Structures are given as structure tokens and as C-alpha cells.
Length: 176
Image (cartoon, rainbow, N blue to C red):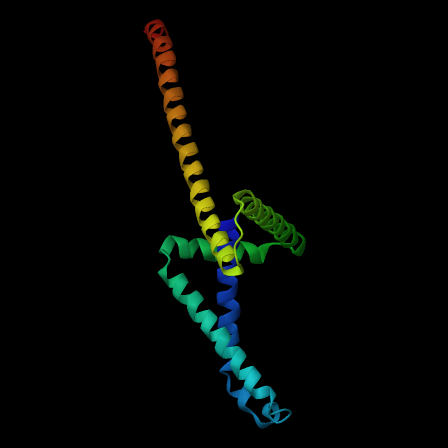
């Protein structure tokens, strides 16, 4: 679910930022009527597109570094998001908020249990490392679960092979 939203957010930013670049680079933005109302607003609007352009460039580079499969998945997720109704989008947003709140509570609990007294910078580093290690732990648990499931499936298949191969002999002899 988190991967879906991450992919969705990246794709959304990419689309919004690319549209912002197209609008900001259009020739109509330099017309005299649009720049005459307030000359003090010009630096603010100039700074915003450059910041947006910078964010877009970072997102574009990150997107370009993904494999073709990952890029395709992001685009598919983005299209899935576009196809959702407003109610469905709100349900997913709420789920994401709840998930973030639980994660923040987990981080705070870990910090409290550690007994550490850290300054803001150290606490940010603690949070970052906790999230990294927690993600690694979750990935390892998923991997271990998949391994156990695969081993269990193999055992089930072998058991069923033995059961049906012992039943197959009398059935095939009666058929001849």
C-alpha cells in the first residue's frame, strides 16, 4: 500500500510539475498586463517556478533511475488513482493517514523505550535510522514468510504426489 502511494505521489508530482513548467514557460506569462499589477510579486512567482522546476527535475531523475518495470508500475498506479472516485480516494487517504500515525507512534515509542535524551538533529537522525531499520525488518519478515510458504507448498505438493500416485495405480489397473 505504501509503495502504491509513493509511486502515485511521484507520478502526481511529475505530472503537476511538468504542467507547471509548461505554463511558466508559455509566452503569455510575459505579456505586459500580467506583469504590470505588482512588480514585487514578480520575484515571488519567479522563485516558485524555479523551486518547482528543481523539484520536478529531482523527481524526473529519480523516475529515470527506476527500472522499466517500476516506471510502468508507477504509471499504472497513477492511472488507477485517476480512475478512482473522490470517495475512494478519500478512503485511501484516510488509510494512509492512519498508517502514518501508527508509524509515528511506533517511532515515539521506540524513542521513549530507548531512554535517550537527544537534541532535534539527533532525534531526526534517530527517526531516519529507525525507519530504515524498521523497513529492513519488515522486508526480512516478508522474505522469511515467503520462504516458509514456499517450503510448506513444496511439502504439500510432495504429500499430494505420494497420495495420488498410490491411488493412481489401482485406478489405472482397473481401467485396463
